[in-house]
Length: 77
Image 1 (cartoon, rainbow, N blue to C red):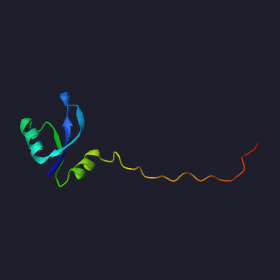
Image 2 (cartoon, helix red, strand yellow):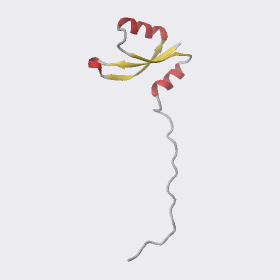
Image 3 (spheres, one colour):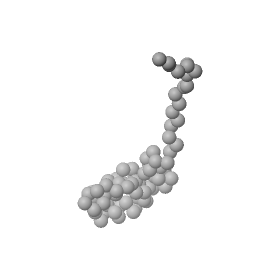
Image 4 (cartoon, rainbow, N blue to C red):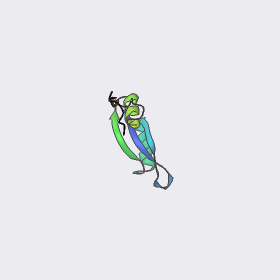
């Protein structure tokens, strides 16, 4: 099983999301209980964990339609 957790850096600064196996998380948590934040657990594959850790980073952004051009002549004064 895989987990995703948010690493806390020195001085309570928030670090990035980390992917590791369940037993590794248990060792991290045992060493410093409550210091890091568990985001997801029980994930079956590393790929699933990596996708959740990245959030929407790396995804193709949705396409937005371009405004349509009009063939109207320019206004003159």
